[in-house]
Image (tube, rainbow, N blue to C red; front, side, top):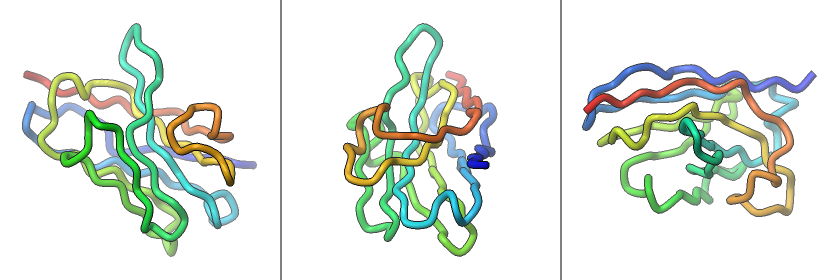
Length: 124
């Protein structure tokens, strides 16, 4: 059974930091890129960042580039999203997902398995 589990969400003041984690089994992550998406109330789910298996390709959405950092620890089967300089507009449910090989990082349809999401709320 493929299962991705996010954790680390919570309430943070604007300008603060938070680190999200996405854990899965070795079989689920091995060889695959993983992405983070977010969905705010009333809005579409949008791409945030992704990381390839080797960790050397990390595309970001323009809205988070320079503030968020994605990384992975393959020994721990975990992908992280470090959030700095947070803004109220970062408030959303954050999801991690596994990307199909050979597909675009930026499209929701490229991802086949998703976690249940973790809520991030940034207060002003």
